[in-house]
Image (cartoon, rainbow, N blue to C red; front, side, top):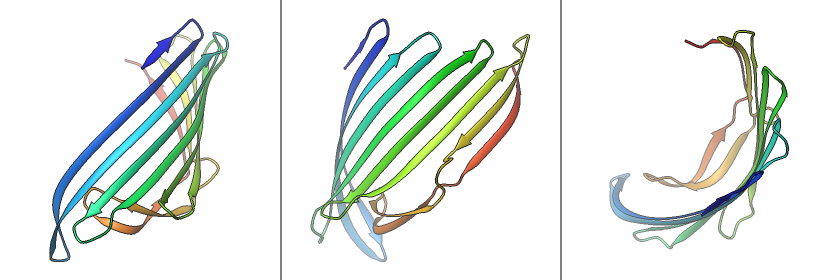
Amino acid sequence: MSQKGDRLEWSVNFRCRQSAFRQILYGADSRVEEWQASASPEIRLEISKAVALRLAYSRSQRWVRQQGSPQARFDQDELSLSWEILPLENLQVKGAAALHGFRRAGQPYNFYNEVSLDARYQLDGGRWALTLQGTNLLNNRSILSSQFTTFLFSEYEVFQFPRVLLVGVVRRL
């Protein structure tokens, strides 16, 4: 569902998924069933022709049942804010900040944040541009989580979020 006005745009997305498969893990053959449901409301506000903000929230729950094991539930939340600013005629600055939370049901939430920035300056004539991109600017630590992947039911997974800075010169053909 979505609605677009002159300066305000909103949408709500719902998604459901069910899957079942067999896996052979460490010589044991078992059937795995998974159900997932998620909802994502989003609001975009155009403050002026030069400034726009977008606020989004996403909530996802996943239920997993492996043959011979009790059902497990995983919760995942994400709150994000992104912005786009056009301070000068040839300069465009975009940024985003997100807070992610995840947990296995009954356990405390694990949180991590993600901040990115993208700036582009279009040189006169419009064929050449200078770009600067930065990803994960505030945090580059490892995250330990309880997760379920499509192929492996594992208690812990480690995610590494590297800090990446890219500077570039772009030429349009």
